[in-house]
Length: 345
Picture 1: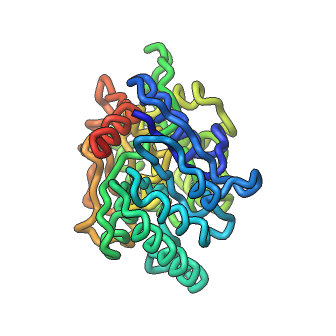
Picture 2: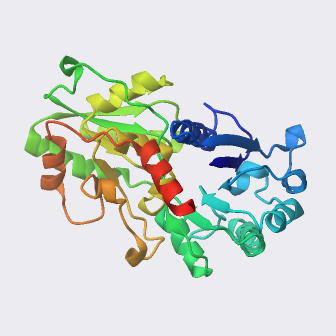
């Protein structure tokens, strides 16, 4: 079988979708599946239009879609439609890492206007191309696609931090409850609500709270909000700066708990959260109410691993998971490879 992955600029180590395709290709190649990567990169004169004129020889074309991966303004223009028409008679898989912007209640008028144009472009492309399978990584995207009559299914988005074994004597010290933050510290996250949950756990376990801000961070207001909570409640706060993947894996294993500051309905598109889940960390997340509750779900491998801050107090179940002697290590790359092949054979 031959699979051609189509994505934006191919920059492993600097682009989440590039890392995703790189890892997934490697996994599929272990199964003797030939994988190629086609980069849509305007800086190198590689476009959807030129791809339409020279489609790859492949049994499956897998489009890894995010509006801003292909264009700085999130609009791909006529080239995308030309590609859609050209690929209509081929086996096409569309993986939505992101859809159109502005599809949430508090969006600005600018986001809603641009999002309307993006939505129109995407729906027109799907109508032209008639994909064999359509996937999305999160509840919100699936809900918005469903509202437009698009039949799409969930596909897990794995993290790009490989598991690096750590000796038992280096695991989490029992006198501290280490809480890992990895990824963007959004200022819209309810940090005071998180503090109340952590204090409840700390009171029961009699452990001091240490907050670990791992890797790079760009949201200064979110970091300031976290620092304010640390000072208010006498939490220890450690900011590591950029770390290599081995160090990050070790930090996850030394931690008792991970925090997802991405809203729960789009948590599935967070590679940072996926990396913490993969390492067996229980995750605290927050439902901001943007997606109807009936359309929210937790991916099956992690049903007992994700806890919502704005649900009834789950301290007892959370502590029980934290105290597990061994944590499940989930091979997300293998899982996605199998699911993708099942759906597209």
